Image (cartoon, rainbow, N blue to C red; front, top):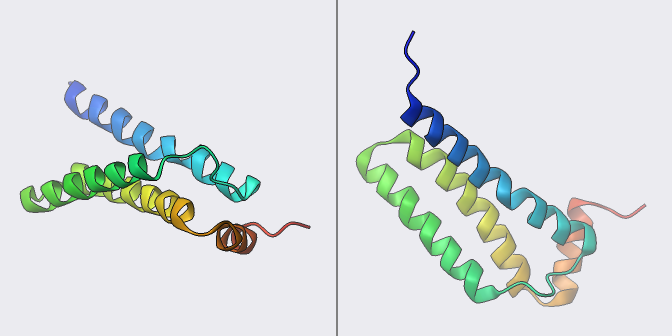
Length: 100
């Protein structure tokens, strides 16, 4: 059995990319704050993941489509939470993780 190191590297990269957004999204939900986060940076991040997802779709490469689409969803969530007024950010976070 031969190991496809290209596939291994791609899988590790895809998993790391997807996982990298989870702590930030969870922190926003738990703290109910986007203080210190850059709207412009997340706008560019969303654009990048949308472009990579589109590129994957045009090439019919699921290895590009799936992780980039998931990352786009996380990045859009964070972008929207930053763009919302603080009160609405808190309301969304409360619905996702009610304080008890």
